[in-house]
Image (cartoon, rainbow over all chains, first blue to last red; front, side, top):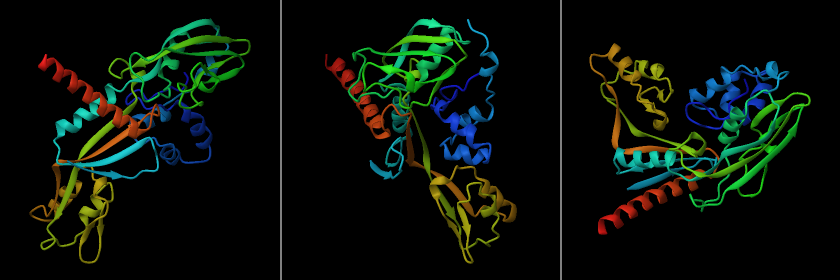
Length: 63
Length: 254
């Protein structure tokens, strides 16, 4: 849906890094970007690698 | 007890080499850091208007998990801080848009996306933030700590035939081949995978390289999530242990 605030497993805050990650992977290797962002453990890395941003799909609906 | 700092340019991380202690002692500090350090986090959300695609609960959960800067002298009796937000779409609402009534308690970074709003959608809430502990909920978890035994790598240099298999097998590349010996470059990077020992056995009858965890020496790493610096996190955790020990002492003495 939208990038989680914290890593599910270790609790490290990661939400604030997502915009930079998304901008940089267009031209750079995701491995290098994740290392630069300080995401060392594989639990935090999978948060970005496996994320599918679906918020735009539901944006036309409201509750 | 001997303690040695390993310098780091990030104030949110500190590494120590602690000597002459037992694993239960280091583990006690680790657990206190994760569960017992008092920090601010948003506990309750009063939603006035929400026409966004997400439910109130989902937004409350996201706002709760945003780490807040916490003054060092905070405890359970510290006052409640209110953080409010008002936004109209189309926009992405970030943690920077939240307004706190106490400057010392505010999001550690303005870049956390809370929600995206479509045209005409509105969101307004008051978030009530109070001090809590990591043992109750992840929102109050202020950091991570971990430790491992200090590795000792012993190489029988007299009998070593310099086949170099251990050097290529090491996933951390800490064994470097020179013309007349195998050198350990950065022993702290060793993960005790023992690939070098297996590789050595495949070419020799006996393992000539040995990786041994030192029982009374640990590499201790503290990582703060930003509520306070890693050093403050460690000192606060130590203070919490001290308080617990003091209260036990008082109860015994009556």
